[in-house]
Amino acid sequence: MWGFHEVKLSADEVTVYLESVKAMAEEAGRSLLGS
Image (tube, rainbow, N blue to C red):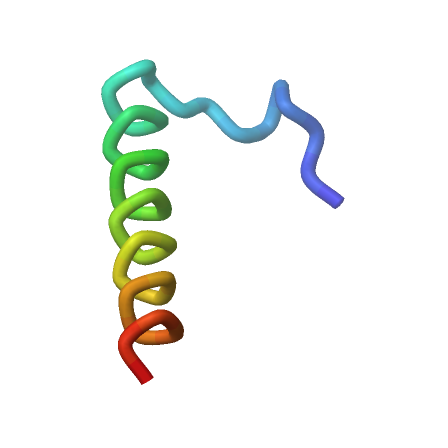
């Protein structure tokens, strides 16, 4: 496990990460609903 003090993410990096996770979740949701 990493401690938060070891992982130095800037606010921008966190935002980009969350946006990509959100986009993947939406894409997966559309695939499931569309099948």
